[in-house]
Length: 96
Image (cartoon, rainbow, N blue to C red; front, side, top):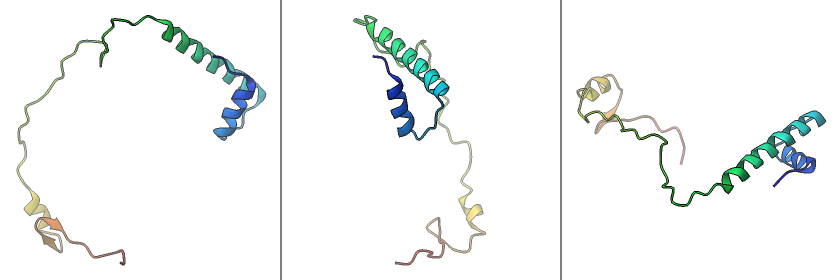
C-alpha cells in the first residue's frame, strides 16, 4: 500500500495541520516508508513462533509484601475540623 499526496492532504486536514508542499512531500515519503516496513514485517513467516511478553527471559524482582509503616490516621486527622468513621467531613459545595 502506498499513499499519494492527496491522501497526505486529507490526513493533514483531518489532523488540522497546515503543511507546505515540501512538508507534504516529506510526510508522504516517511509514511510510505512506514507502510513498506509493515508490509515486509507481514511477509515474515511466523508459523510456530510462540508469542512472548518480553524479548528476554527475565524474572520480576518482587519484594516481600510486608507492612513497613504504622497507622498514622489518628494523628493526621486530629487537626481536621470534622472526622467521622476515619473520613474527613467537608461542607457541601454542590447544591442538589
